[in-house]
Length: 149
Image (cartoon, rainbow, N blue to C red; front, top):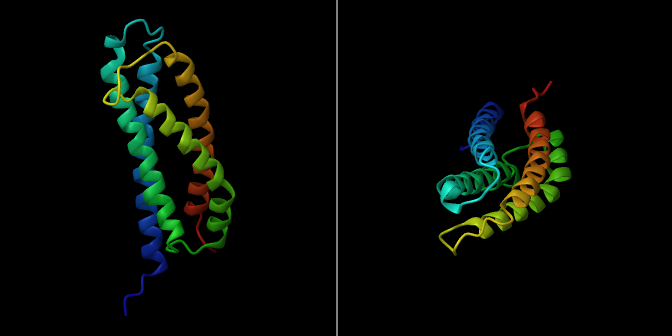
């Protein structure tokens, strides 16, 4: 019999949460470093930092999607409260994912020559999307972190 206990599932979900929070913190640190370079006058002054930020942004986004939400979607999370919260916020999280991908497509220098004319505006808009996404993810994290009575 290959049955996973509730304690094992919770330990797995806590590991996923911890990894997500670490990746999110690293990404936000790079976001702050990038924002501190304002005004953006020369692409050479921010290109390496922008590349590292985009990599961290995509890693964080993919990890949340392919680990945390897959864990929930595959039925390994069985608590109704967690499922209710996840179902409530997932649509908006998916929309922020598209905004993140759009930002990455615009500023991924491996795809094309970078143009920093709109970087300030795009970073500001991305920051708003990230703030919303983090609040939504935190709702799921709080639900997953509650002990079942």
